[in-house]
Amino acid sequence: MLAFAKGGMIPPGGVFFYADPVNGVPLLQEPTSFTALVSRVRSAYLSAGKPAPEPLASTVEAYICEHVPRGFCIGSYTGNPPDFMTPQAVKERSRDAAARCARADPGTVKARAPICGGCVDNSKALCLSCTGLTDWAVKMAGRTKMGIDDSLGICRHDRILVSLLVSLNGPAPKPDGRPDNCWRLKNVN
Image (tube, rainbow, N blue to C red; front, side, top):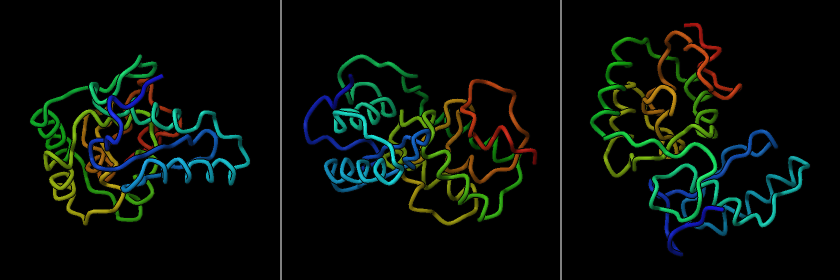
């Protein structure tokens, strides 16, 4: 199982996070404490009427490790390893998408963001807050920043900044291994 390379580490973006939508646990974020996140995750499983996986702290740590850049954690990756793109490549792909697509209304953006934030393919392979890409994406989208924006990374399928992607209306993609709950599969705008 994956584990943080050093104790006391904070994930890129400065937020601990976890989601298990299949078992009724939405995206949970905790900026101050890993222990506080584990407590909130345990409560979410109880609220959903599901048993929490044990040891829960190790499960949460492994989840975070699967979504951040390699080198942050030690151990063997079991899921999709984080994809790495240079900040410039991400920015160019995102800019191209923004030029081709109309903007979604604020209500739609607010509904899409938690879906993407809890997605296993929301890659944290770059520290978007460190590079300024989160703020850039929000400006490109022409909207105000939401609290969830700091936990949105890069869509592994579209390879676009998720903070921008949730704000765009474009054609639905061809099936490409996306999770069934991906709003992009249903988007026909």
